Image (tube, rainbow, N blue to C red; front, top):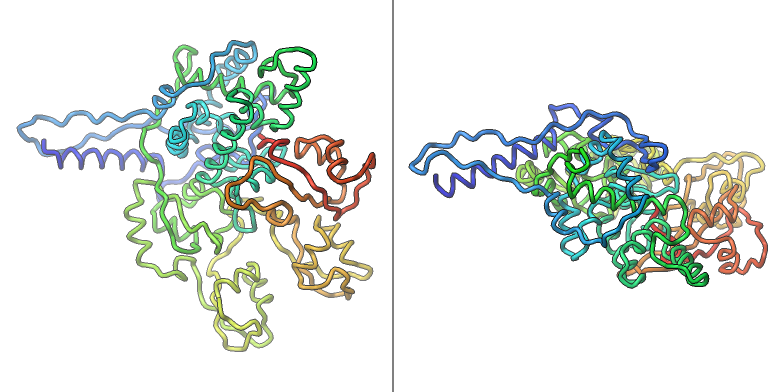
Amino acid sequence: MTKVQSVLIRNAAIAAWVLCMAGCASVPVDHGGSLPDPVIVNDPAEGPDLAEAELPPPLSVPEQNAPIDDAGPPEPIAYGDVFDRIRENLALPEAEHRRIESEIAWLKRNPDYLARAMGRAQRYLHYIVDEVEARGLPGELALLPFVESAFNPYGYSRSQAAGLWQFIAPTGELYGLKRNYWQDQRRDVPESTRAALQFLMSLYQRFDGDWFLAIAAYNYGAGNVQRAINRNRALRRHTDFFSLSLPAETRAYVPKLIAIARIVQDPAAYGLFISPIPDAPYFRVIQTDGPVDLRLMAQLAGVDTEELHALNPSWNRWVTDPDGPHRMLIPEVVADGFVVQLATLDGPARAGLGIHTVAAGESIASVAGHYKVPETYLKRINAGAATDLQPGQELLVPVGSVAQLRDGLGADLERRIYRVRPGDSLWSISRRNHMSVSRLARMNGISTSAVLHPGQRLQVSGAAPASETMASAAGDPPASGHVKYTVRSGDTLSEIARRFAVTVRQLQGWNNMGSSTTLRAGQRLTIRVGNNTGVGG
């Protein structure tokens, strides 16, 4: 058999495998199982709150019909298992504790949960292992999304943490994860992986090379873990992870990771089976050079829109952010064809844009409202268009809906129109819509002391974007920083303290409140994060 024939056979086999994983437009997607569930609750005491799902089919390599030559029949093609790479790089310290045994016992009792999570991991694990190895980190860290989200990119916790790595908004902001109307990069696979590993490395350095303490701090917050260490020191007790007084969730967090790592190391020893994941890229990152319509991109790639969104879960809308990042993750098996198809389309066609002819009396605001997009979007894609529209003028507009890709994604950042009622003020409207007065005024181009008139139309939103409520990260995100939090109606100091993993006394001190616990909606609090709060999960 010639060398060329061997290469062709191997490429065909890889293509067959990825097609099995990716699915195509003609194959229905199992929305209840192949894609992650909307919310992940990691509480072994209660059991996983996940819908039953049909397990993915076993991987197989089709037989090849290669011409017979003097070399004899082709040799079987061997694929590596990405779990083998993890096994070779397990580096966390040896530990024995009843909590670890408890977590192993739970997984043994719930093999379906393990199978579903590892089924989801097929899309992401090869990439994550590459990133972990590139930084010289312990192989166990590639399994941390199993603990955080069960590899559900749409996972959303009770503490409002999101994505595979379960970042809360303030920590995500500090590590450069963009969050706005269009996207939430806490769910972006490459960006959240970068941020999580960077954060873990900073915690490892802070805790003098103790990975157990660093991993605990990822869950509970570096400041909280440090205070637990200080308490033990004052009592002349040991300061290792298993000796600290920590919340139940954090006490179980490190043992969960150790437990899954031990099962991955030798599943048969625990009476379990983990389907191999081929050691080959599942997706390729392709530049789009501008915003794109995800429905069209799925059509060009020949995959189901659910499959495309599972690889690009950060997007809230059917159209991507005009400010980028301008890239798509495409299944490797169809990537070459996708690139060819994409090259045939210009910018407006890629974004799924059409032409709207302005009618008499129409404005940017009314056209934006008709197509349910922000005014800033229309202004951006129609750069140079006059603000005062003229009848007959042509504007680029989205041809299809830009509604949410999945229910709830980015809902808190949507803008709506509110009609002013008698007795309304900016203060009352901002409280009703959980906004600050200054943000409400900025959104509508008016003064914070403006007098409102019944019937007046104002733009409102459910909550301010992270970029407007938190300190922006510049350059390399710091390991700690200050967040500006706008108090909402009904907030209490204790609730805010729990949300950011700080204490009420710290909040009072940072904001010169003395012993006062009185808050008012719209009040802005300074909160120190990074060394005081973890990612969540």
